[in-house]
Length: 70
Image 1: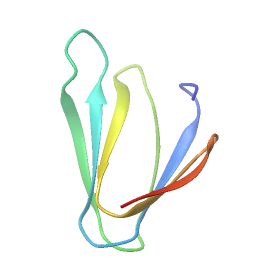
Image 2: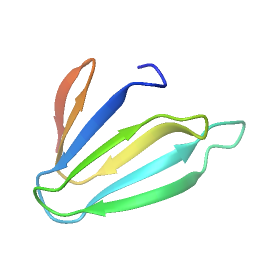
Image 3: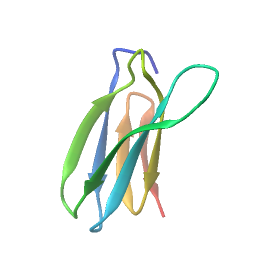
Image 4: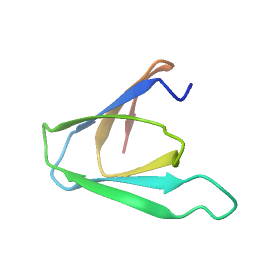
């Protein structure tokens, strides 16, 4: 996924946590959002964000496809 690509996270239950992780030698949490059922977040990787951790049931759509986490 390129830095300019967007990805979509749709909460399938209340309380889905979306956590951004930093780039660099030490990976750290730097941003957190909580989504309720039906809420959608559109995000992208940046010079500061290298990974995203998602807790809870959600539908994730990227340019590489679509997936659900359980």
